[in-house]
Length: 297
Image (tube, rainbow, N blue to C red; front, side, top):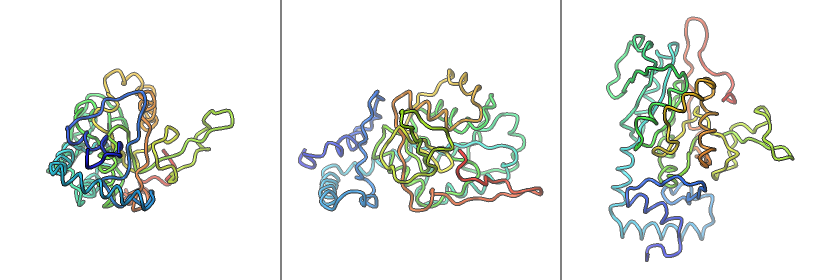
């Protein structure tokens, strides 16, 4: 305990890594994110805390040299999961280039497509795993099968019409390492409440908020900006299909519902760049295929 005799938060996060464990989900969530992995995030705590945490971290790395290797091991257990539709297929190679041409390398990229649409794919990308599905879950394909099949992987959910900037995946990974018991993402809306405590309607929310930085149940993550889910945190199974079939266009809201009933608050990952994304503006012979409104879920 000599490395950190008064920093419970640090030990909670670090020994999860050292013991190569995944936290069991509990009804009460403790946010152990104390900026111990990524030095650039220290701006939110005072200088005395910064000096203390630096000393703790350096002492810890000296006493446990295997820590860095275990961090790398966790990086190898991350996959990117996305889906697409016919009009966007032509732009998938460009999206994949944005994903893999980063300093933070992700080796597992899965594209889940309804089986009848596979025949329209006219490209080959060596490290893209195109996976057919028996059910057409539309936007829910981006998460349902990856979370069901790869329960020991942390899963990053992306949209298929975005170019992602250099800090996106590294900052998501740092958020996951720092706090493996919540869901973190690059874009959040704040659901506002009325005086009686009930949440207001969608158009009264604060869109793309960036001032609530701790885990908070009033936040809703949107996959437009990219989101990371720790291994098996939502425990996806076939029973969810009953709900998906009734809410086929509401993937972000369903993920919010699932995290709420399991007691998991979302957390905003602050970006070096706006939303961590660079818009792709795909065009057809008829009209641009891009979202005109950033505030749309």
